[in-house]
Image (cartoon, rainbow, N blue to C red; front, side, top):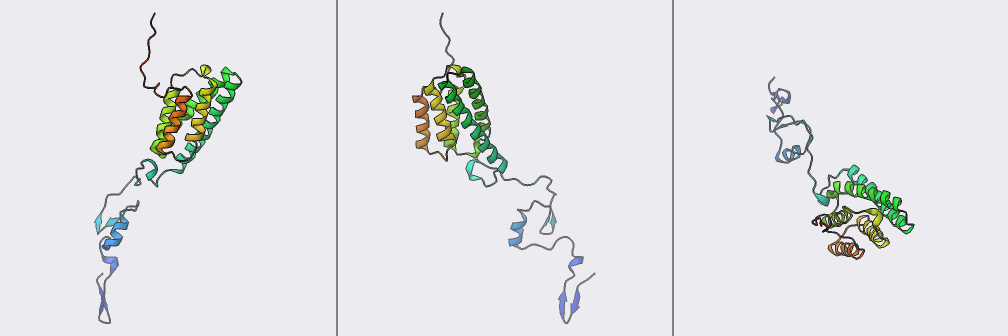
Length: 194
């Protein structure tokens, strides 16, 4: 088919044109964001088989999955419950209760560590120090002050809003005043003499 002339005006026959009509600069940019295969500037583009995904880094990304945020909230709630159960069990002198709650807390802190990129770097530091303080710990030997420090760190810092450097320093101070060794996870193992 060829172009038609009507009343002295030539009208192109778009159906006979090969490929897609050339995009303008404006529509060309929008085509880059599509996940559907398309022809760009009348040149065939390879078909994309995997949808384009934006990488996320910490809080700056708008592409965080709702399921990750939901999981973070769930694990935080469970960690708070375990920390509160630890404090209750130590006050009741229930060694088994402390061990169960402590092991649960470790499990939920590990899950939070897996999702750490969702939160800010200061929150990640507090989580890391708490995990270090609880590494290689015998839960049955924890004192009420240590359990209170653990609960305070989880409830007032990890489960609270965004953390600043000042609040991070406060969390570290609370853990150290409670008698928790935040460097235990990287400290050399002492060999007893004798």
